[in-house]
Image: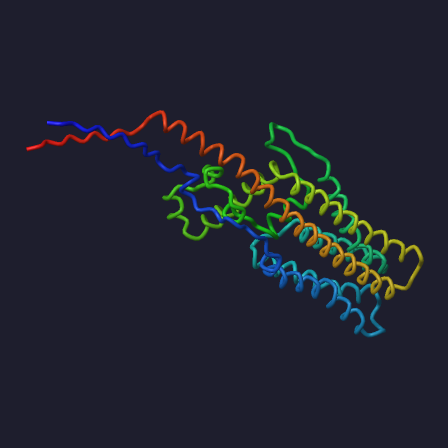
Length: 315
């Protein structure tokens, strides 16, 4: 009887090796913003175009305060439509409704249309201050209570990104995987919640590891804060110059639409440049950390070879 000992080094493939990650990850500007174009157009139509048309076609015998009230109905309809579709009322929609109701009551009581003209600008200046406040780093309770620049949440809403889209390994986000039984129990709700959690986790990781993303968040937040503040100052200037209600209304909408378009264009430019830099940064991170992790795993397995001993009996 002879015995042949054949030792084969067969390290099991690591989780990084098993995962298929896209080699060339590219950012598509069109596919990213295409789903948001209808919502943006509807917002422009209901918030600017329809109010302007309604105000201009109102009979001259109607007092300006009542014409402004009727012209302010389309934005409210848009807010309720969004709330019905998404089943939630966002903070901006709540501010618009409360601001319109309060200013309408006061304007009708005082017969002053100026208050209705200031109503939208007061909301924009509140948003401007809110944007500016988020630029101040704040955290407490060991990272449980903190905020990011407001654009950080824009990213999560407008450009939802999953780990496969940026080529991050699954092992970095094992803690967000929902149990199988929970996924079966909530056939429709759980996948949505899981996707939101995954997007939140991905952006948290990118914010910590990619300086280009952090700079973009601060830059976009600053752009919108300054833009909204300029809209308020422009409308306030028109009022202080004692222009007619019609001129203030038309010029105010022109300024608002112009500033919105400029801010959107600058935001798109920032996001496009940021995506290129961030994807390149993630690629460098993977080449440095994942390759090192694979080498360490292979070295650990090389110290524990798997030996297969085969005994052969010769006649």
